[in-house]
Every structure is written in C-alpha cells, then in structure tokens.
Image 1 (cartoon, rainbow, N blue to C red):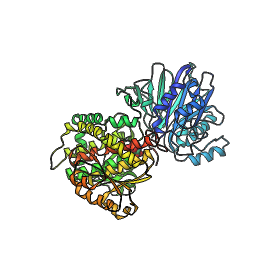
Image 2: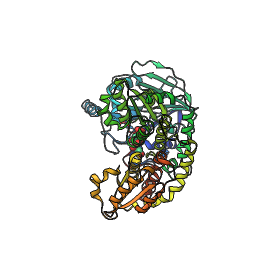
Image 3: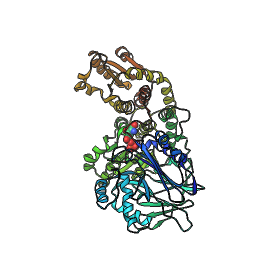
Image 4: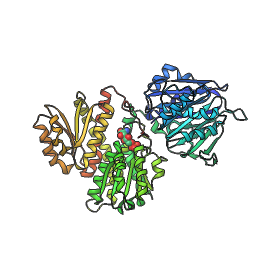
Length: 603
Ligand code: AGP
C-alpha cells in the first residue's frame, strides 16, 4: 500500500517523465492520488499533486514537464485521510523547506498531528505522511542536521513505514545535494545508476534504471548522493557497510508484453510459472527442511488472507487427504486472535503471502513466535519481511505480479501445496508432474470461450453464488473474490452443502448459482444443483465431463480430464478469465480495482 520513489542527480535535468514512469510501475501499490516533487539546484521546490491515477494527474498538472536534480513521486492508497489534494503526497513542512512522502501507516498520527498543531506548525491535511515531514521539521527547527533530525523523528513515529525526504538547503561540501530515506517495516530498496542514485518501495520502478541494488533493512536509513549512498543504523547513527547486489531477474513483468492488461498477461503466464516452480522445487535444498517441519509437526496451520487464504483451503485438503497430515487453514487475523494462543513447539505455522508484507500475516507470525512453533513462509517477493522472519521459506517463483488481483501467484500457491502433499503422500497414485504445465495450457485454451459465455450470463446480474465442495471450496471462494474484486458484483462463495442451510432462500427463477466440482464429488454436486434447479435457479457447473452432471445443469464449462487433485488446481482458470471478461464488459480496469492495493501493510 502506497509507493514511493526518489532520485538524486548532480545537476538539474528533466525529471518529470522519469518520475511518471516510476509512478506507473508502482501504481499497483496505490492509485487514490499521485504527487511529484522536484528540487532544483537553487533549492526551489516544485510540488504538484492531485487525486486520481498517474496519467490523469500527470495531464492535469503537467507532471511530465517537471525538472530538478532531486525528485520524489508518491502513489497513495488512502488510510489516514480521504483522497484529497491536501492528503495527496509528497508533503511540505510548515515553511516549505522540507518535502517528503511515505508509505506505510503511522499509528500515532492523530496524537502527533495534535502535538504539531499545538506547537504552531502548519498542518494542511490529515494524512500520516505529512506527520513524517513535520516530525523531522521539529528537530531541524531545533538546529539538528537532517540525518540527526530523521533519526530523532523515527523515535516519535509509531507503526510500519518507509519515507523519503529532502531539504531544499542541504548540500555537501562539494555542493551536491542529498535525499534521505528510512525503513521501518515497509519495503525500501536503493538503486545505483551510473549518473545518480534512487530509492523506492519496490524494484519495478528501479530496474529500468539499474540492476545494482542495495537492500535497506528495517531500522536503517540511507542518504542518497548522486555518486554514493550512506547507510546508517537509526538507533545509534553508525554507518553500515553493505555492497550492492546485481539483480539478475528480468523486468519483463513490468511490461504488458502485448496483452491489454497485466491481469490477462499474468493469467496466460501460468503454464510458464508453474513449470518454473516445479523445476525450482525439484532442484532446491530448501524443500527437504520445509517438508521435514511439516512431516514432524503435531498440527500444521496454513495461514493467509484473501486469495492466499483460498490457496490454503485447497492446500489443507491436499495435506489431509493425500498425506494424512492434520492441516488447518485459518485466516491470519483470526489465527492471531484464537489458535495462536494454543500453539506448542511441536506445531508448524505455514504463513502464505504473495507479497510477504501483509500486516495481518506478519501479526500472525509475531503471535506465533513465543510458542516455539516452527514458522514456515510461502511467498513470492524475495527479500520480503516474511522471507526474513521465517525459519524456512519457499518462493512461488512467479516473477513480479503487477495486477492487483492475484492470479498466477494463487495457482503456484496451490501447486506448491500439491507438490509438498504429493511428496508426503501415504497412498494413491503420485502426480504426473511432467504433464502439469501442459494441462494448464490446455485449460487456458479450452475454457476461454466458455469463460466469455459465463461473463455474458453473469454480467446483467447484481448478485450470485459460487459454490464448491471439499477440495474445490477454496476454488469457489477464490472465483467469487476475483469476480467481486474486479467487476464489483456481489458474489458470495461457500460450501455447496451449506447453501441449503439458509442462502437457498435467495433463489428465484433464473437466479445464478455456479458450482465447481472435482470428479469424485460429482454425485454430491448433482444433489446440490437439484436443490437450486427445482426452485427455478440457473445452474452453471465447472467440471470434467460427467454424464449425470450433464443431464442436471443449465450451463456446463468442461474442464480437461485431470483427476481429483489437479482439477482443484485448474478449475480456477475459467473463473479468473470470466472475472476478467466481466470487468471489461463493465468498463472497469481489472488491474487497478477501486479502493484496493496490492500490498496491505495495515491492520
Ligand atoms: C487477491 O486478488 C487480492 N489482491 C488479495 O485478496 C490478496 O490475496 C490479499 O490481500 C493477501 O495478499 P498477500 O498474498 O500478499 O498476503
């Protein structure tokens, strides 16, 4: 949530297009408002910002024309303060000498604002990013230099955040002027280019400029000069020596590559990322310790939020049914409040998060630590907090997922669980892994037209149900989430056998209910379809060809013949596509659904 990027050069130059490009690449983190600030050699600050997406704001305020030797861009996902001009970032201090922006959440923002106002500072909005700037202003006004002022300010700010700040007057003995950034719980990476240095919440904005990356750790601050960076510990100001790494992963992920949207591209990347994950798992020494922790655990909890939780539902079914391992899927905040209290050292907590930064998941991790239970991470973003804080972790190997709706990372989460359960399996026929990427390709091809048809059918409707059973419960929930996330229709997912316990009363003639059926559950699903059909409801089924189902349902989306477990993997694909097509039909941008952000680092 929220994205920041800052860059420093030795001389004035056009910065607008560069900042806009960085902003577009961070847009998945927030798009309620956008702002750019530049500072030129004379110390003149040019600040332009407004509500809306990057290109709208860029056009309104001619952001592309901005110039200077230092620049900051911020993309906001609103938490403190409604999206407005005042709350858009970057922010100035009272006198317009400092300019800065943050991502994260300053939990004591209300108290700080009251204090700043009482002390006579000019507080223009209610946003917590503004409090970061005033917190530094307070110490600069007491005569401290920027580094000391930022370190002291950090002591006043509570919460997880990263922020970047510049002083119009500050210069080194050589006349060069710096930018400062600090990391406390939110992402921050530094890039070193041949002509300048930059800092960002995340790599997509940096990698087009350089592959020399310096990772900043929590509790560190960095001073960026055009030709060098200084890394310090916030607690005592001591300099930290750390060499930049060469980042070798390509940045194709940040380009749409001929597709209309990142979501469409990422859906179609699924065969490739599945193959890459399987290849990685077969070769990696990380897998055995992870497996051993699960194998030897008394109980295994699979903990995540949103889409990652839905993958946990399918994963838990795999562990229980294939490997006889008692695995329990739990939403992260609920885990923190309930089951974490009963953890013992013999338990394993598998924390699942695409971003590896979701606050609810990190809270669950923190709540689990004192028990001595084994902490296992499953994540896509390498270098994330979850990766660092887990005892063992496995990556999802998807490359960057830019679109806010998770697609390829969900599929690889489910695939990873199936792979682990298959390795731990006690009975049944092992999965033919060689076939899996091809099966995903085949599914993408065969369900595309039916998915368009499902979107046509559902588009006129304001509400609907998606139901699953056993292994496909998570799939139905995920399909329902995807649909509501990007088409804004109300779609509820639930266990198909629960439908008769109340929601069935919603059914009227032509009321749409979609069922996801794995082969062994077809007979049970037929019963559930009949309960809807005899009340006039319209049934849509996703399943492999089954004569009984065929005779019972109104619409049939045929899945390739894949067996019980792999059906629960591929059945999500028509739902991803149907959601995508329905979003387009309704005129929305599926990559950036309203009110959302890719990474939720707030409670
Ligand atoms: C999925 O489309 C959503 N973007 C959302 O539910 C997401 O899965 C959830 O916020 C958890 O994110 P994480 O996997 O990064 O922890």
